[in-house]
Length: 241
Image (cartoon, rainbow, N blue to C red; front, side, top):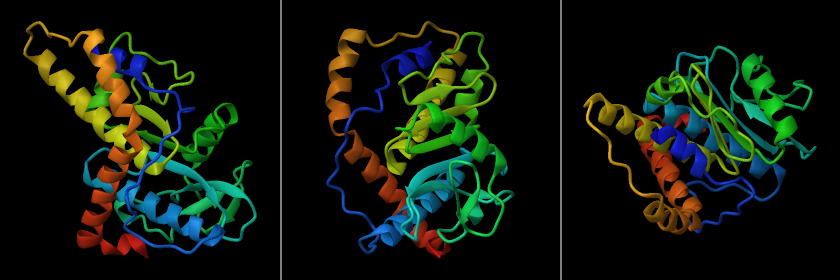
């Protein structure tokens, strides 16, 4: 299946990515500015994925490890419990420490996010960004009898009958993973629905293109993500509040 091929070829998080894309916002130097930048980008991720129809109710969750505004180290930023993704703003995101204790915000954090995401980071401290969704086509593939479930050092996990988790070093990269993973799953399901034999591109052709693509992956991801930032600034400007 295509899904197994995709999971086999994803890159390890230990790779270093760079990008020269200009950010569509400006923040000051220091912990407060880094905290503000994370809040802005997380609000875009929540609202952008909602606009794309890749979330389900108020049940899915995204998180990022970011500096605390007071400069006292890092904590996990996530959305408050019960908030719809279309309601997320930069200021209403909350932060919890490694013991799931609130360190920023005054609203209860999403419990599943606290448990699942902190648990992932216990074994994968390199997973700066963790995103979990029940996006429809990927979830459909996860219901097949033999999906790849082992995450290991890869950045995509198909969860049996339960959607997907992706991890990345940046919010833009994780957002890009979810978007294109869903499009790939959609194309796979549509192709299989024809009940005709699917012709796969040979591995010998895929690998050279993959190597070239991944060298500039962060640039591609930033360009895509920041275009969503600009779209939301026009249609839902309150996300920056």
